[in-house]
Image 1 (cartoon, rainbow, N blue to C red):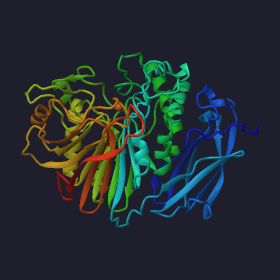
Image 2 (cartoon, protein in one colour):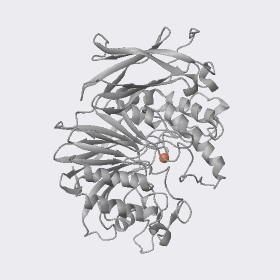
Image 3 (spheres, protein in one colour):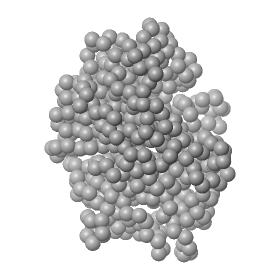
Image 4 (cartoon, rainbow, N blue to C red):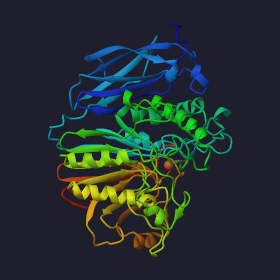
Amino acid sequence: MTPLSENPFTLGVASGDPLPDSVVLWTRLAPAPHEPGNGLPADGSIAVQWELSEDDTFRRVVQSGTADAPAADSHTVHLDLRGLEPDRVYWYRFRADRWISPVGRTRTAPRPDAAVATARFGLLSCQQFDEGYYTALGHLAREDLDAVFFVGDYIYENAINAQGGARRLADPLPSFYDHWTLTLEDYRQRYALYKSDPELQAAHAAHPWYVTWDDHEVANNYAGDISQDNDPVDQFRARRAAAYRAYWENMPLRRPQRPSGPDLNLYRRFSYGRLAQFDILDTRQYRSDQAYGDGWHTPGPETRDPARTITGDAQERWLLDGFRASTATWNVVAQQVAFSQHKETPDDDARVSMDTWDGYSASRDRVLAGVERAGVQNLVILTGDDHVHFAYDVKKDFDDPDSATLGVELLGTSVSSGFDGDERLPDWETTLAANPHLKYYDGRRGYVVVTLDPQRVRGDFRTIAKVTTPGAPITTAASFASEAGAPGLQGA
Ligand SMILES: [Fe+2]
């Protein structure tokens, strides 16, 4: 091996998808993170040593070995460790040549039959690099969490003009980023840019993440094979294949998630003792094209058409079968776009978003029918995408406030997308009248801390006042809880 003359650990370390005996460890070698190819040879492989320890000083190393970082995977490592103890904190690090990576901390899941007293999770989404500092991620890194859910828009595909558009950047970026991402190299470099951020690195190093994507990991508002601008399908599938490939390379995901061309199996299920089942959805790859265009529109025959789907048939069956088989106290569904109905005005012909579950109401009705049929009483939906905090009661019939509440939806705001945002919604009274099941709004940046115990779920909505300048403090703007067996959000 040629010696590495520069430190290759510029993009941090990560862990993810914890199981009772396993966790995935990740890193990517990039001595020159802002150059195509990251300053490494275009073929071959680099050997990376790794260590897993019971303490953060690596005196009690329990496993160690060597992994390959192949050029074909843009020098990423995906290490699927086995034989770990359940519900245990571990520390890990990598070494290549004479360079040693930052230390990561991770944690395995409890055994499936374990009674878990309490567990805490972060909920993140939407981190457009050129719209704000990752202050929220720095704060999240210091939270006491079991794991983190990232529910989409990890990168954005837009051209970044470091001179004009990139508001957070003191140092100009190479003009390399000043075009839209289309090719595998574009997407690989976009991940390198985002992951060069020290606060994103800290958030990954502090907690294991369960990740899923939304649209911007490929392109805005795409649906299955169909791009927003209706590009030729073959052309869009090639772009999707490049984007999916770079996504897998850059996330702490296992081998079964490795894509094949434009297909990547991202929906997956985890258990957290008897406390929770996590169903992590992919509502992008298999969805029907948006109805009535991609924007806001009055619902009509097309949104209600049972032949249209947001999950695809196979994922829907898998989800409903999982509800039936579940014995967990909480059924947590982590997914990308708003599930609850959200009307623009109280009028009967009010518009709703065609890109969310509102645009696929037959899909939503089938999921809610499945929830009822399975006797699921503790549905918790974790969502992103809207760049604001929302909290909703999930109603059997959203048009009838007296209908049963079947669960709750905690929709977390963006990390940075949308710049600073505003705390209050100017037409809050109208929005509330249109959506009586909506319990909360805050339009600033941040994340949610979700605490589960056998009695209740609690969401603490963390916000920061500013992301266009660094270093803002974090506050808990509001907290809501819902009791096990009696879904419905109450201020807490
Ligand atoms: Fe977003």
